[in-house]
Image 1 (spheres, one colour):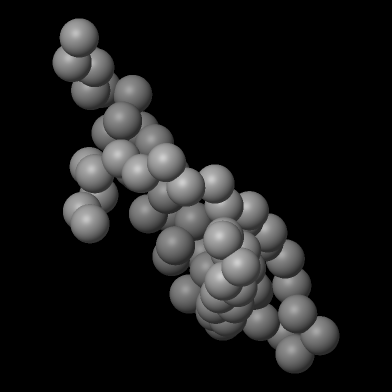
Image 2 (image 1 turned 90 degrees about the vertical axis):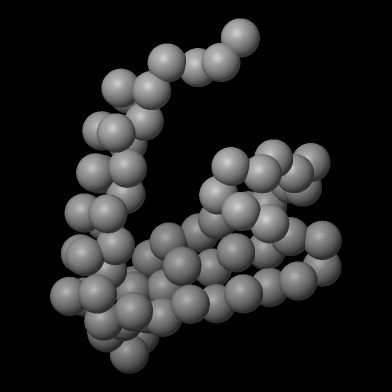
Length: 64
């Protein structure tokens, strides 16, 4: 599965701080739960990547 492959899967994404000072991305889908912990610095890098991806996505003209 690549970044441009669509799937008909619903997932829940939760993002928040842990009691250990980490930032957790928690994905739950089809009975699977995936906790991903990042340092605050790593989380800021990920946030910047998401911001840049959103900026690039705004420039894409959807195929019809």
